[in-house]
Structures are given as C-alpha cells and as structure tokens.
Length: 239
Image 1 (cartoon, rainbow, N blue to C red):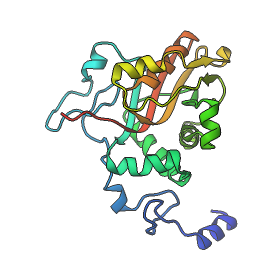
Image 2: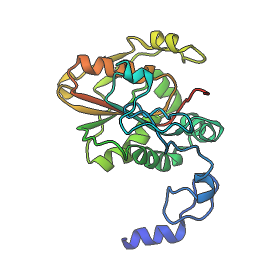
Image 3: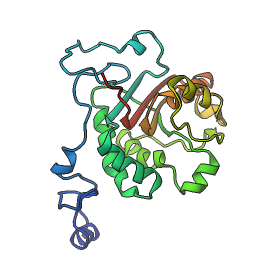
Image 4: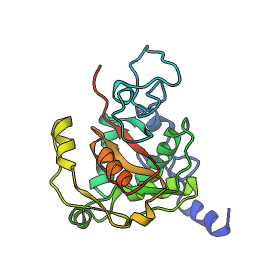
C-alpha cells in the first residue's frame, strides 16, 4: 500500500456502505448487513441461474423449464441475490438517489455470483440508457457496476456500440407486455466492435429478462459470438 493510500485509510477508515460499521476494506459490507441479503448460493439453473425451490436437489447441469425449452437468448445469466425488501432498499437509492457508493459491494457480489461459470468475455457492456433518462439521472448505474467487473476480467467496457431509444418505464407490465414494450429499442451503431465478440452484459436488476433478451437479439444479429449476463438482483416468483 502506498503512503497516500495509508493516509487516506487513516483519514477515512473503511466503513460498511450501508450502516457505517467498521470493516477491513473500503466497499466491504459488515457481517450483519451481508446476512440481511438473500444471496443466491443454493441449487440453481445451470444456464440462467434461476434458484430452484428449497429441498430440490438437481444435478449440476439441471435447467429451469424456460432454458430447457431453448427460450433463453444468452449462454449464461447470473444474479447475486433475490429482489426483496433488503435488496430493493439498496438498489433503488443506488439507481435513482445518487448512492453510487453502493456500486463497489454490488459489483463484487456480482463477480462472486459468476464463480460457477467458466467464461472469458472480450468486453463488458453495461445495458445502455436512453439519452433522455441518462440526462435525468446523471449516470448509468449499469456503467458504475461494470467498472469493477471489467477490471476483474481484464477487458474493456463498451459504452457506445449500442444506442437505446427512449420509452416510458415498463412499470407493472406482464412478462409478455415487457417483451413487446422493449422490442426495437436497441440499435447497434458499431457492428465491427461486436462481430465475433464474447460479450458480458451488466445491469442492476432483472425482472422478466426482457431487456437482456432484446439486447442479446440485436447483438446476435450484429454477429456477437457469445453473450452472457449478470445482475445484482433478480425477481423470483413465489413457489
């Protein structure tokens, strides 16, 4: 550790970004806050990472009905935790309230979520925001999450190969309505940067998978070789 880093550590000792309790390193959660999240660490779909019900003991290659039917457009998807009251209390302030300090522990959790898949992406692509929404919010939360993930894989971040058209939020639309609503919002502007590449898509939350599916569709059309996805949290239907 450099002298400057030691001075910074002394003046600003590491603290849990949620509750402020002392921790060993910056961006790390304390044990109490870590235990409040419903981390996806049990049996799950080998392809999309959807957690299987408690008590179900599948083999390592078991897939959920959607993936088994060949309806997934990505090679792999992983999520760090389930979308619930705890993850929502972090994700919404991070996304809409400027609490960008959460990005470090969220992205580290996302890297942890990919521990069981062997991938070697050529680039990391944060899911694009429409310019109007980017102007309103001031930042793309997916880009903030992408930084540490790209660093972990030693690959660049692609910010500008895909543009997104503005459309109102999907709100409480059904699964089918979400897929229809987002159809055609993404345009590949730089196909030469996409062709033949293995791409890791990054977003904060996954509800129906419509965003990943549509983005993967246009990337495939542009010649992408493989497409993966990772999010911090995902919606899981009650069993």
